[in-house]
Image (tube, rainbow, N blue to C red):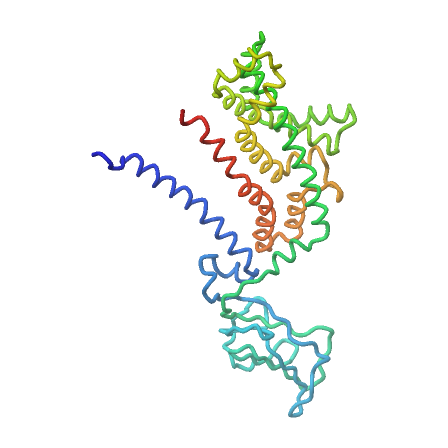
Length: 373
């Protein structure tokens, strides 16, 4: 019927919405987890972040030096929550049985001290003899903690030693590794699209073939070559490596874009005697700007998030380590702290997201250009 939507269009929109939802849900869950502490992440999933969580944790009582004499007994009193709030369900004095006793019950620990823990977290430790030791008794409790969020995870990641240097190193790698292949690919794509030379078809076939070659195959021979010519383990080496790995896709995309430009414009410029270099700079380059910007976005995202190429061609010393390498080192030291992993993921994503949303209009133009005549 006239004016009615095609079922295929509706199905396409529905599939696109489902794909967006499938990608958005894990990202949103990671964002929520980055604001939760370790105990709550271990106790419940991110979808229950707004509800109280049942957590089994270890608490440390005040040290024996704070004990006072009360009713003839040496007494230590305090609250395991330290004002944070919560409700105790059960407690114990051993890690093997962290929920052995009901709240309010008086329990004699292995050292002879009597321990009492109330539902609101108040504890009392009493002994007939002076208590010794530099640290307080460990109290294990199963509690119901209210939902809470914190910026402490981001403070730990951003404030980590060497993080600022790693951020600058990543910028030093990503910006030239984006600009260099984009410029070279622009010249090469113009030659393959509009200039006539004998082996043009063969060169294009080689470019397409290089797109399917795994870059890992080139690591050892390329690094050996870099070491022989004296640029190994340096910024120049990693720039050239990223350039070589990104050029095939860049040339292929830009060539396919340039070949759709109106032939009359190029031929008129040649008839007027304009050199090929000037045609490229004054006519083709401005018309190809959306495609160049679109490729530059993807190249920057790839180089910013890269770890393998940077480790192979740059190194892992403190003055050369990139952001992904620094965060990987942090996860090695804090392997069980998933909240640090979640916060690190969003710290790494901050700059790529800024670049993407700043230049997305050029990306959209590059994708849509040529679709309507």
